[in-house]
Image (cartoon, rainbow, N blue to C red; front, side, top):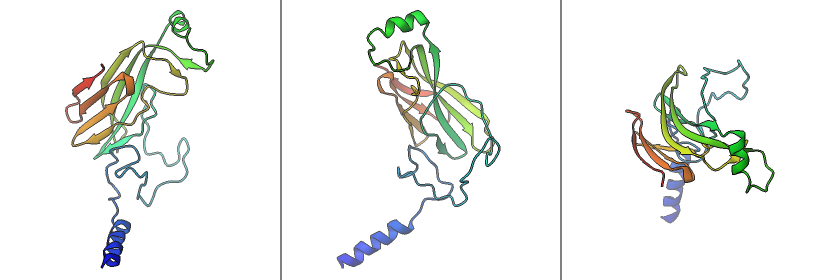
Length: 178
C-alpha cells in the first residue's frame, strides 16, 4: 500500500504541469523552480530576431520581470548622482578601491508594461531614499525581485524599505522605511 501511494504521488508530481500561459508572479516563476513549460521558446536573439517589442525604460534594475495576466511588471532604480564633492566626502571610509556609484537620491519604481504591445501602462514611485549607501557600479538599487499575490505587489529592498502596491489602482497601500 505504501508503494502504491508513493508511486501515485510521484506520478502526480511528474505529470501535473502549470499552464503554458501561467502567470510568473515571483522570482523563478510560478513554483519558484525557474522552469517555463512553453514549447516554442526561441533559443536565439539579436537586435531584430525573435523580438516581439521594445520599450525604452528609465532607471536601472536587476530584478526579474513578473507576469500577471497581460501585464509585465519590472522594478527600476531612478538615480540622481551625488556631486563630485559629495561623493568624495561620502567615500572617505571606503578602503576597497572598487568602482562605486554614489547618489544623492534613489527612487524605486514599479513599472507595468502591456505584454502584447510593450506599451508602458503605469510607472509608480514606490520608495525614495536620500543619500543611500553607495553600491558597486555594476549593481542596482532595484536588485530584489518583488512578489505578486492577490492583486498586490510586495517589495523588500533591504534598508531602503518595504512596500505593498495595489496593482489595479497603482496606489501604495503601505510602506515602511524605518
